[in-house]
Image (tube, rainbow, N blue to C red; front, top):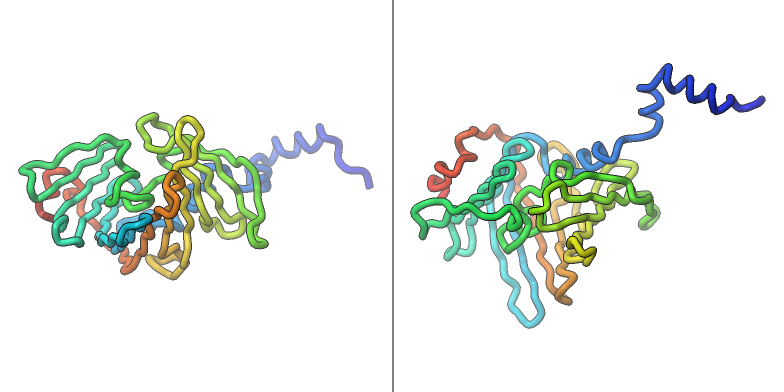
Length: 248
């Protein structure tokens, strides 16, 4: 039996466009959105995180936080340990970033470039919203330990973002993220992370551990361990700079 002519196939696709689009698979944006939804709930939630930072020749530094998040664009990071930093609160609201410290009378606005840097916001701690902050394209597919992954190339939509580009490995079978590489504008790799220890939490199978490696300093890394995921409604007023003192 002869195959349909290309023109006929094109006509069939025009006549049933939704079916043809589905047959092509998910769009790059949808892939990243679904991976984001696995890393973190897309609704209101609270979670605890311990960040262990390791550097050559230094004693490991352990810090603990409570994260409260509402939707995709409002996040609070409350420091609970060490005692000297207890009461510090980081607020991320869309493109705004504020920090409150008990030693200050008023919250201090920070540049967006600090959103993914520093001990308190390393890696995913301040809710790295890849689908909202980056344009996505499929660079290639790659097999890792017998599992097929999309390798997504993410380009920052805002020049103020710390990382100009990411490569992001997402499973083609279940959209679970495997790892990511973070690049500067010049194309130099700055950090690499792995998503590990998937557990049932907050209504989905999520990575309970994220290992962030500093590729510029050999042996330097931060390990983020998540626990106590709770889905719970959050009031809008909690995510305003005037409310930050109540957490201090």
